[in-house]
Length: 446
Image (cartoon, rainbow, N blue to C red; front, side, top):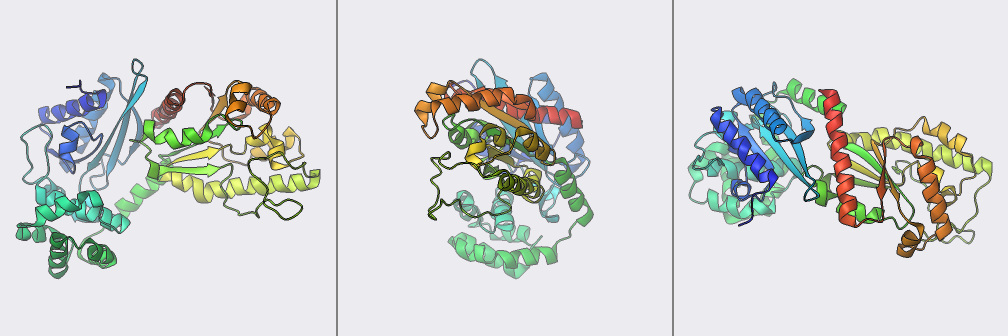
């Protein structure tokens, strides 16, 4: 049997500390997976009166074991909204990042509406091991409605277990659903779930939401305060990658979730090529009206100075509006926003954008543009890079690498990454820098 990994040991230690301090808790879903060490995204229910103590135990444990916090939303003083805690540990020996994501639920709620109260979630829990599991009927009801209410569809993974648990337990299941549904609708949903008629349940989503709004109470002020606080703190971040074609930018983007997936999964990573695209522009056509081949970016000569200035102003406006109407709000939801190139590329490769302006003008417009939190500069040997991708000449690659190095001070929080390394090593370096930046931001806020 393989030795437990650091993340498994951390979770085990946290549960043991909760027990030692007499804190009531249970794992909201997938308790078996957590116990087997397969799940590191742990959803916990903790007695609402013990939230602050449970939070302090987590802080102290992380400090003792050299784990670092990098993301947190929610306050222990608020016993209504979900609290999210993200910690990481870097194993220099294994050259690997371990991440633990813990969500604490004082109640099961949807957009401020209480679905099931704290005391119901903690009733009849199984304490045969440190991995306290929820009462099967309560867990099944939570698994049925959590994705349905938020996303309009029951998660496929949970369907078989829901049907199995519901079957033969109608009285208890309907009793639970009556907290937030009418008796008639609760009975209908029960029958559909037992029969596996999930499409009908999905189609009744709006009716279910309407019933929840009518049957339950909503803590408007508390919920809005939580949303405002989360948006203001912007738990996500924005990163940009600069480097000539052939430095592996696309490969890095595709592999990011493999190293920081417990913090930013594929569904919470937003990718942008070069600019936000908030303002749409016409496709680039040549003199004959044909679409310019994007794999040959230097085929056309630069515009004159007046047109170049107009294009740069247009691009700058797109960065400004795109940030405040798109990028900021994605980061406010806890997403990782990734840019391939970004505005800084105007210093590096003017010909790609057919710009005929000097760097002083580019630097002036840059003053109005929100900057990425980290800018990764992918540097390597020109011959190696050119061998990977021959869209531009080896000499042009060499020129761009020199510009990146010389202009590094112009790029906010720039980090040089050796693109000659293997992809796993590049991803590890990128992941470590993202997590360390998040950790430094948390330290400033606290």
